[in-house]
Image (cartoon, rainbow, N blue to C red; front, top):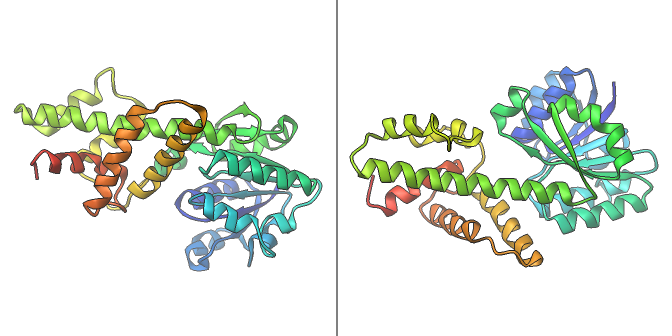
Amino acid sequence: MANLGFIGLGTMGSGMVKRLLAAGHTVHGYNRTKSKAQVLLDSGMKWAETPAQATRAADVVFSMVTDTNALRAITSGPDAILSALGPGKTYIDMSTVSPAVSREIAAQVAAKGARMLDAPVSGSVSTLEEGKLSIMAAGERAAFDRVEPILKDIGPKVTYVGANGLAVSIKIATNLNLAVQMLAFSEGILLAEKSGIPRETAVEVFLNSVMASPMVKYRGPFVLKMPDEAWFNVNMMQKDMLLALELGRNLGLPLPTTAVTNEMLTAARAMGFADKDFAVLFETLAKMAGKQ
């Protein structure tokens, strides 16, 4: 069993730590708000006062934070991850951030004699709890081979995609599809409903049709009843859409459906839906169409 560190104990990070603890690993965890980690502490996680302390105590340290700025905050500074890395250690960042910044930090990690992987995940809280999470990993192949068994304790499907930065690139490519699909699903449901078909009937038909991707199957029913707590809110989804548009510009690749969906997320924020699950795109479009 491995000696691990984990920085960032939000909804997904906490779920990952639960799985690592259940697999028998020792986990030293850090979060800005200690009270949010109490359930994990009760389950055997060891508390670290700083990201550096969690890193020093571990052979492999993970992070899962909200955005690129948050990643810089936990990696740079006297109490941050980079200050405590050294030969033999592996740093795995599971956040969805700028690929360029991820590569920049990987170079800083290598200068310390350590190795870094970017390893974001595809899936939701329910996917994680069911043990069906998919992980994409990038970085030095030898480093990946060493930690692959630990990654598989978080999610059973782990795919190596290449050099540093490529895992977050493919995660961004994956996530833009989620929002675009949700908007298209919403358009279809509203078209059927405004034609006179009950919403519930339209949802049933769609979820049993060829267009029902796994994401549509678990998030489509949200157009009937939104969850009390967002699985992935509008702000977080728009952050990923903006990363996609930035990457597209850098690569000279037009992303027309991403651009349109990003504008709809802006409309959702303007309507006060920033903290709602991004499935609220349906309600956003419905309001624009004059439906309440």
